[in-house]
Length: 106
Image: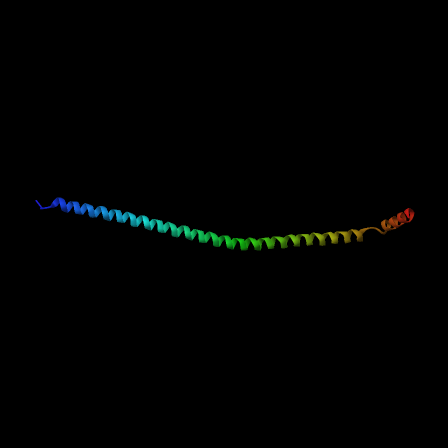
């Protein structure tokens, strides 16, 4: 038999145990580091996306206000054209009747 085999096996198991513990600690540390990097990356992306979307939403607010103003101006100009057309299509007898009615009342 090999002399001191039990001491050699004990040293081998002790070294294997220590290297296994060190490997677990190293892998756990690397996993935590990867998790921290990914969380930081996602937070940076979220903050940048929030800044970009706030600029885009500001542009959309301006665009919405401009479209609303344009719609109101189009309605006003259409209403003016309709009033002018209605006044142009009124028969002269209507104006004569209105003036006669005014003369009677006043």
